[in-house]
Length: 409
Image (cartoon, rainbow, N blue to C red; front, side, top):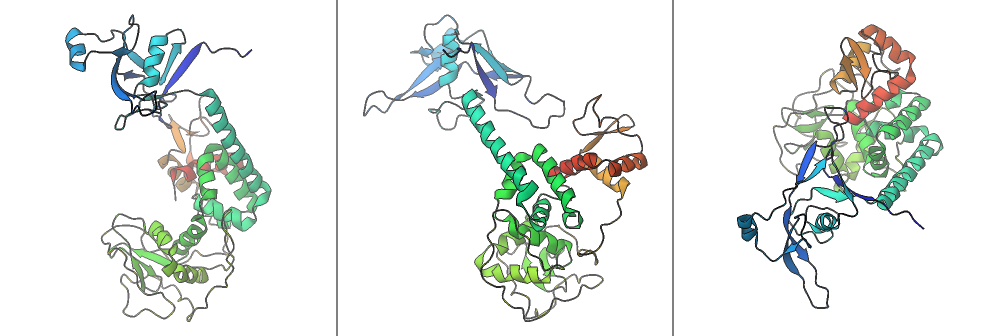
């Protein structure tokens, strides 16, 4: 015989993932109104149901009342006992039938399938079976992802996945280092990693990121347009949109498939990057009429008249203007060069800026670490901390993961 639960638990919907005060993910106290008008579905066929007023008043036999809201206010028939969620939770003894009836049918309960439109929910009833099923589904997905990272993805696929997650230097790293970083990322941000692996747009996103970074294209922030490195215009960027995101959107449309192939052919490397859900193309890429232009010391600020045959025709889907964005990249970069020397001070300052590290007095500490933890009070100087980061791959992987999650470039 199954053991009957003694309590029913209701949980607030106002959850803060990264609160300023440690452990304070919910508001200390949230009030649930004790009066509501609900929809009661009809029981017989053809009965459309009706609206009824309900009130929680200890001592009453039922939550339903024949009085109007105005009469309730005049007589003061409101509960003197407020219903409060304390630290995001409300534990109700299953013998408190009246209160349970009210909480289950009111519009403030997200779990109520008969909620009236326009009513903002405040809480939900905890369903252990559903939570267990959701946990197992996510855990199974994470297990599959870890299996893919360990043995199911080739080096190019691993590099592509790391790039779209924010590690723009992934193509200069050793495969084992990328694999380790992705495993750490899967522990800290499993949902984002699942979304990245299921998003088919990420196959194109790798090429777009590398095109901006590798001096193939650049964003003219004054004209708010994307140009080839020789200054010839590709397209205008709608006001308020990120240049990389807009070029990604554009290359996903049939008229601009040749533009994507043109970008691929101009990249420093010729190898194909794939993500998990991308199917290899069956058709060979169309030939180009002209070779890519070499990068000048400083890209011109405005397009020259008459684009070469190798460039696609200018596209202006929206006529955007005036949006500041990515500045013209400096020459250099490219593939095949050794990774740049580790700049400890710049790396640590970026980690502080994106809250991957914080300072407790003079000491640097890893995000969310507490006194007594391994990475609390790591060091009190940039030089020593930089040496420790280089000597401890786990520490660097944890910091990198937090930077990826925060969207650091």
